[in-house]
Image (cartoon, rainbow, N blue to C red; front, side):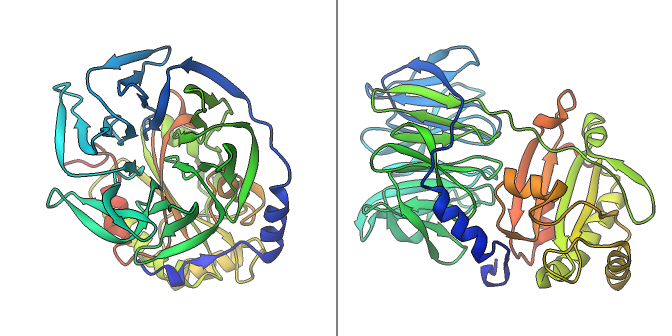
Length: 410
């Protein structure tokens, strides 16, 4: 990845507004779940929630109550399949096997653990370094931990697989693929949902939500936080109680015609069992001009293999930043790159209309970004979402690796 070429969109005005917004607490609809004596909580991409208690016990949310799972843990994270990865009081690492219902020991020792929506697993190790303790990422090809330079005490992982860390002075950083970028604020804990929504707690147990450039204060108070795939926060307060926000977040639907005047409806695609890939791009964006031919390659490959996947280029702005793309600009763009995939326009700008709904709901601050939507046929609005943002030379392979296993005929 080359983050330097990732086109940041947020303007200075938006940044100033977000800085001011921290002066106000945004009311949340908090729902009490239980008093567990909890000390950590984790929520996976499929919505599975696990908790670790101060007594060391491990609990799993059934949807209505917490069930005890034999084992012990002090920190917990949940992978894409709903299995818990835990760190014990003596820093050992285990993964729960959903089939055998036994814990599998993993190499190494850790203080904290985080898992992204794409399955990436990161840990805070036990070797003291500047900033806290060493940082490592699980290498699936070798089943070992790969050290990432840096030091921290808490960690969470975004859907693209990049980690956010909090160090021993409360400073927060995001990994950009090669180094750590400092973010504003002083934090205690941080959680990231599979849809990219980020929440944190402060040193005084205040709760905040990331708006793409800064933290917005929220009502309530908590020590530890995780985030569900729908963007709702799950928190543990100082008394060990578990609460969650109950804010409805549905995938925005659309019915739009492409440049060939063919109509497409997102929810209809998902209801029929189709996986959907959305490419949010603009004519003025330099890397969008690089990724467009890649998306055409993806479209052609999936069509040749008769995959049950629809790919759409959501071309929302034309040659000028902030100005919606018209049909003439879109046609020239499509001709330039010999695009035959559906190109959708009349969808607003980065901060308005349909695209504005997506960028605000899924907290995107730059383009292009790509959404892989795995269908929930009975409730399309609750379909599972994975997001890739930035510049990747292996974009086609990356997207194809995130498609459901049954999306293409073998």
